[in-house]
Length: 135
Image (cartoon, rainbow, N blue to C red; front, side):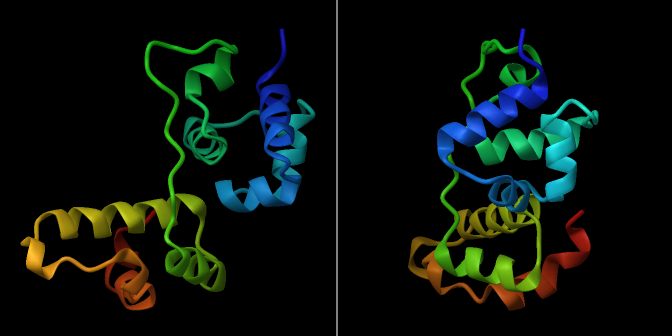
């Protein structure tokens, strides 16, 4: 039965991604990912979750090789403006997702006349306002 690292490598290759691409999307170092794929390292639940989200896989699949009762996470579309900001600011995939989730929750509570498109958000200003809440 393939290991967690082997399942990660298999999915990464299916997506045509290098270790560097996946490491950036998951917020881990390339060397950590390499060690994980080669069975030289163990991984904590939070980091495994970040990798699963980046690969659009379920935690059940990564841990056991079988899908659980829930659907794998759907692919998240990060707005281009947020992706650009995240790259410049050096924030992790998880932090970018958290920013996106926070912004979407705020928008959901506004009246429809006040909603903005996510590509027009000043992500730098928004990040500065909430960065103390990001982990």
